Amino acid sequence: MQRTVFNEDHESFRQMLRSFIEAEVVALHDEWFAAGIVPRDLYTKLGELGLFGVSVPEEYGGAGLDTYKFLAVQYEETTRAGVTFGTNVHVLLALPYLKLLANEAQKKRYLPKFVSGEEMWALAMTEPGTGSDLSGIRSTAKLSADGSHYVLNGAKTFISGGVHADRVIVAARTSLPRDDDRRFGLSLFAVDTSSQGWTVGRKLDKLGLRTEDTAELSFVDVKVPAEDLLGEEHRGFSYLGLNLASERWGIAFASYAQAAAAVRFAQQYVEERQVFGKPVASFQNTKFELAACKAEVEAAQAVADRALEALDAGELTPAEAASAKLFCTEVAHRVIDRCLQLHGGYGYINEYPIARLYADNRVHRIYGGTSEVMKMIIAKDMGL
Image 1 (spheres, rainbow, N blue to C red):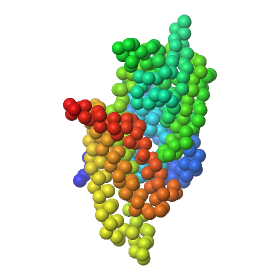
Image 2: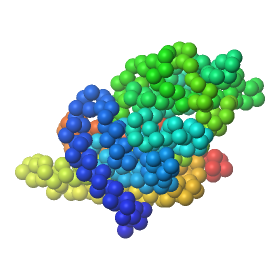
Image 3: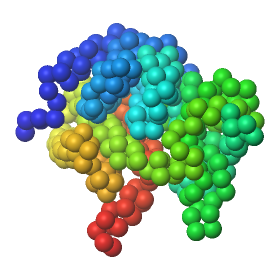
Image 4: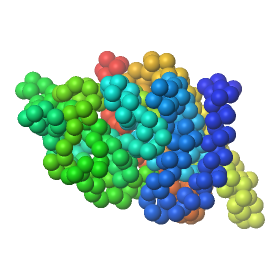
């Protein structure tokens, strides 16, 4: 079936990105994997390529294209090459908040450096004692007597991009919750990580996504200028829900792309690997396994593409995003596991991209809302 989601501009972007990955990333990625982080100058190079400014308005240095399709191409090309950039949170998570909540003065300050990669952004919601229940956030931001700044105190964990981030969107309490509304009182701040009292703690040692740094953060009397408040005071919880559809689409699409890459890696391996004097690809079981995986990948691609079109049109509902995430992540889990099995013992060795893919994919059924939460959302939408 002919795929219609991408046009010539997207394919030109694909070729440019593929060439960059082959020339600038592939040979160095093993070093980044071992270090558990990408070099900071990678972001400047990606900024020069235009990866960060696709959907940023032209007046702030971007291309002004209101679409997620170029990001989708990036997902396909990085997974195809078995590499990661560690920039997902910068574009998929942080940027929508800036576009929706930043005032004109803030956009002029933030977005040009966002586009160039001079300032990398992260998002800090999760705390050591607070995961999915964001109404339990305990970090506080108290307004000074003269109203010029807030004083931020607290801690966050599992913060993707937290090591390299130059600014972080932090959710903190500016008021106690109301008796009838535990969600009231949260606010969002665009915090400069060079501020006194801001500390990057441990770089967490994760199972997968090794090149995408994840950190613990702490704040002790950090002064945040009042002009770095995003949106209105006390409305942070409602803001945090605005981008869930795009975030869950991103996880769904990345999962489909990982599954497609897994089939590619497995086919290459079994065509080259000899067992009992014959290529592994010549055995009926191998053919049947890869055929079944291919069929699942095509179904996931259709779901991911349909969700992408709906997202670009502003029509992707929370339940539809949850459905796409649930389906694509579960497909990727099954497909990657079967493709690793076809590698035999080598599938368990990090030297092979299928092993890294297996570890990288596992978190997709956890973050952005667990598979169990996705089922609850879908069931509620069904009236159950």
